[in-house]
Amino acid sequence: MTRRRVLPGLPLSLGITLVYVGLIVALPLAALAVKAASLGPEDYWRIVSSPRAVASYRVTALSAATATAFNLVFGLSLAWVLVRYRFPGKRLVDAIVDLPFALPTAVAGIALTTLFAPNGWFGSILAPFGVKVAYTPLGIMVAMSFTSLPFIVRTVQPVLEDLDPALEEAAQSLGGSDSEIFLRVILPLLTPALLAGVSLAFARSLGEFGAIIFIAGNQPMETEITALLSFIRLEEYDYQAAAAIASVLLITAFAMLAVTNLLQARALRYTGRS
Amino acid sequence: MSTPPSRRKPPRVGDGPLIRRSLIGFVLVVGALLVLSPLLVIFVQAFSAGTAAFKAVILHPDTLHAIGLTVATALIAVPVNTAFGIAAAWAITKFDFPGRRLLLVVIEIPFSISPIVAGVAYLFVYGLQGLFGPALQAADVKILFALPGIVLASMFVTAPFVARELIPLMQAQGRDLEEAATSLGASGWRTFFSVTLPNIRWALLYGVVLCNARVMGEFGAVSVVSGNIRGQTNTLPLHVELLYHDYQTAGAFAAASTLTLLAIVTIIAKVLLERQGAGRSGRPALAAPAPAQGSKP
Figure 1 (tube, one colour):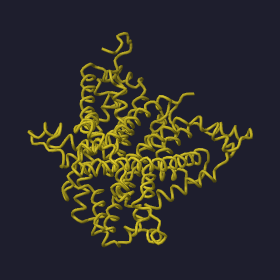
Figure 2 (tube, each protein chain N blue to C red):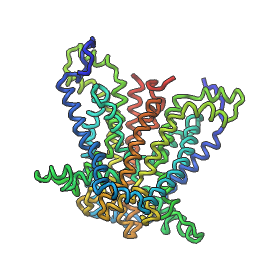
Figure 3 (cartoon, each protein chain N blue to C red):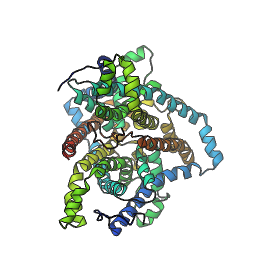
Figure 4 (cartoon, each protein chain N blue to C red):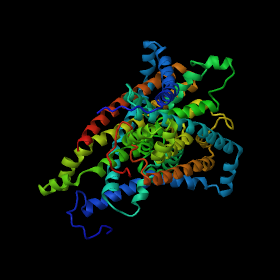
């Protein structure tokens, strides 16, 4: 079975790949880790557990969780509508789902801020009800929801397309109602893709910077995200603190990456069988 | 309404008119509020001070310089990244070697790392307080707060873009064609250019388009390594921020509208390329051979 005929180009292509990955990706991350480690455990802990840092983790994680929960509902609905229904303008909607990926985050940031500022299109409607979005944690959630929108749609959409109609028909012929079939047949089949999308969206929200800093207000302890705190420490020439806080984001990213890969491996096993 | 009445199959789950209409309505309303209105507000604001003011901002030397710097960055970073993406895809899909899966994961790392972390990390390599900083200063080589730093940071954040489009596709296509070509005496390069490249060209272009959009729009990583020097190291997204913080809202949106046009062109290109079959396999690169759907013979 292993009929081995080796193609040319391994040393060159692998060489380029390793040098590039080494210089562009691994070296900077290693340098950051070394810098953060040079602090020593006590100083490191003092910086990463300072009240301001902890407050930034809280606002970042809570906002990311809320934005992801919103996108779980909206993204799933969007994927469902795009796969299951026909309506005028559907292709436009399908294309526009990618706008948050294509639009530079700084542009998204100033656009959302202008919309939700107290005198903006949405802000002026919400203001009489006492709802403030711009310069509050709510603004961070809006920005995160915008930038992470495509992840869940695009991971669920192909799985929904490939779903075997026979499963639904079988459930229907057994007398299941629509909601029963959705919850007990369709949703379980979508779960691996949903989880993968959720972890991607959540990871992206944790690291998001450009779209958020305009709308957040950036008040320490209240609306300051972790990425911004690292940036601020840098501007204060407190390089070690910047490194320590960035390392927290880095560790979180690696943890999320591990989770995503595990979920993907599981999702593959799932779909590989059908 | 638009559903043909002659469908004989029983309605599928969720096809009832009530659920169907309310779901479509929900999606369209929220989509319009969250995605479409930011797009609209950009152009409304860009022209809020009149066409003349718009022109003045676009033709201002600082804006033109920012555009030039952004294009220069893309002209370097995108081709280098493309070459890397092709090399990585070739190595990973045409050969078996230990650590392939690990390499796949490492290539995808920048995708899940905050751009701020990337910028800070580069500071500790090329900055004065970093690994090579002192040596670079002694040799009078400027990397940070100059074009090379901007290019390097952009290459970091977009490193996976081309590779992740090519790897699943090339994995699905297998090695038979290339093996046949080389066994007939074609050289490696000839095999690549006349056998592999025609099969991956749309996916390659797709990756390049997305990579370019991200490079030109990158904000976080570049804002750390560029130093934000007006008229010198400000890329277009940084210029947008600068104008915005200067309370020149209309100007910021005028500059932003050029980036928005780029985003729209990117999406159109993406749709056109998807019609050629690209991007269907652009799921996470670990998702090995995608199911046969979508890949045209």
